[in-house]
Length: 313
Image (tube, rainbow, N blue to C red; front, top):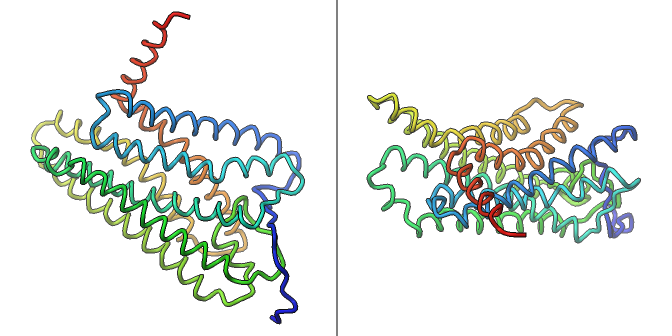
């Protein structure tokens, strides 16, 4: 395409989740409730794990960072998605679209590898309980979160810069409810081969490598559990990693569904629904799963509520 036919894009229009006007109000109410639960649940998990001395173990260290990532993940997408239900045309400035994409990618990639770190923590707790405190030292725990943060920040900046230094054709309608890499790549006029390869290779590497770490960890955990003679010991081992395993199934099941499903005319609408699930619903489910299945979290919450009730008004 000639340069004369290119126009400088200053803003994008987000199509949103659904078009029928009668669904806008119900969806707005539903996703507002989901987003509020996500914010309260993840903030509560962060505060609880910082305040209660029983939640100072490596497991809750990772859980606190998972809550922080989920909070950022849902906030990078949720508010703008809610706006789409109450305005006729959801416009996002060029620079804010780039910022949203960068933060979204950073939080998604971070979550995958934080989940891997949590799987490794479960493996050490069950397979090497006597050396647990030595192996999972504070320095190791910080390394297992700092490295994913740095890697995900680098990857998100690389992808965002590669997309936004390219030329757009002037068509500025994004067929999605947030600025995502693949919908933006379809709007480019310049060659998209290198950008597409970066997105495809990095997505495959992040998904497969993090899942393999989790898979190997749980195979070793299962082998250790099956060798236990005590039924009580097996139950305790399963309960230690039960919540994490549920979250893993939900998150990776959604992501593999998005990337493995056969492409068809309905695939993009299906992708949008899956995106809603892992960008809005999963950040709400994670703190609920961990709090409802975890006696220590429920005990810490009960303790704080009890102390608040004692404060004179």
